[in-house]
Amino acid sequence: MKQVSTQEKTVGRNCYRWVACPMCGNHRWVRLEHGEPRSLTCRKCCSSETRAKMSASRLGHLTSQETRDKIRATKIGHPYWGPQQHTQETKQLLSKMKLGRHLSAETKEKLRHINLGKKYGVRSDVVREAIRQARLGSKASAETIVKLRLSHLGKKPSEKSVRLSGERLCTMWQDPEYCQRTLARLHSPESKHKATQATKAMRTGVSRAGSTKAKISASLMGHTFSEATREKWMKSMQKALHMQPNQAERKLFSVLDESYHDQWAFVGDWSMVIAGKNPDFVNVNGRKLIIELFGDYWHRGQNPQDRIDTFALFGFSTLVIWESELKNTLAMSERIREFVEG
Image (tube, rainbow, N blue to C red; front, side, top):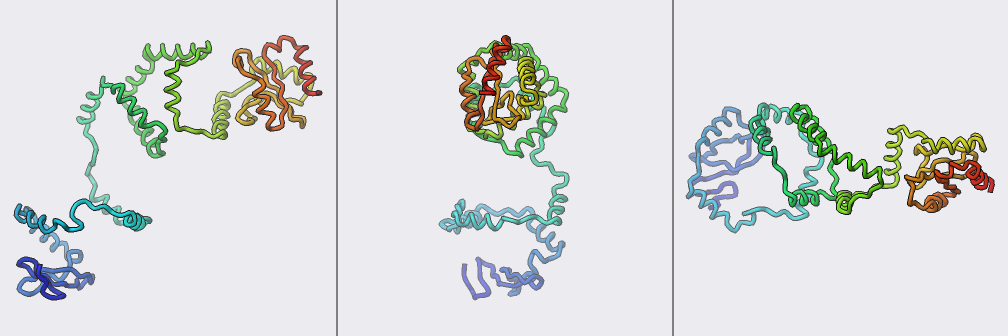
C-alpha cells in the first residue's frame, strides 16, 4: 500500500480518497475514477435503486484462488489473524455495552416480516415419523443410563425447562397413539406386579434392598430441604387427605374430654408442628402439656424418649401412651391424672 497524501491512498492500481457523505456526514474511503470519487453518497444513504444495482453487480462474482492467496499472505502475522481471545476486561466492557439494549418495536416488526414463512429447525412430518420409527424398540445401554443419571445428579431444572417439558408432554398427550402406548405400559402385567410387590412390602414392613436404597440416596444427592419446606409439604399432604382422628385417637380423646372437658384439643392433623414433629393432643388451658399416642404397629421400634426430649426443648411436657394401654381405661386414666396434676 502506497500512501499518496493524508486524504488519499493507493491500493494496487486503485486510488482512494477520504470523503464525507453529504447526507449523514460519515467519512469513508471512496475509489477514484478519472480523478473523482465514483460516489459521494454512502451505501446507507443511497437510494434503493442504487443499492439494487450494487448488489446486482456483485452477483456471480467469485474471487480467484490467486487473489485469496494474496489476501491470506497479507494477513499472516497480523494480530487479528485467527480466532480472537478477548481479555477479561474486554469481555466485561462488551457485557456492559449489551446491558439494557432492547430492540425497538419497529425493528421487531421488520424482523418479523423478514422471517415470515421461514422455518428454522422445524422437522417435517416425514422426518418426525422416521425418528419415531427409529426409536421404537431402541433402548439405551446400562452404561449410558448410568452416565446420564450421574450427569444430572444435584442439578435442578430451570423454570423455563420445566415449562417447556410440560408443554411438550401436553402436546404429546394429544396424540391418541402416544396415549395408548403410555397407558398400555403403565397398566401392563409387569407394572401391576411391581406395584403389588411394593405395596405388600410397605404393609408387611419389609425394608428396601440395599441397591434400591443406594439408588434413592444417589438420586437425592445434592438436594437439601429446609424444615419449613418439609412442614409445608406435610401440611399440604395431610390437608389433601382430609386428615381425621382414627379410632384409637377418638377413644383417647373421649377419655380426655370426660375427665378434663374443653381442656384438650386434637392437633394430629398437622395444625400444630414443633421442630418438624406433629403432636396428637395439646392442652389449651394455658399449660404446655402434650399427649402422644403411639400405635403398636406404626411406632414399633421407636423410643418415646426421643419425642419427649424434642418437645422439652420448647418447654412442653409430654406423656406418651401406647395403643395397647387403651384396653385398660382405668390404668390409662390414672396415668393421665398423674401427668396433668403432678
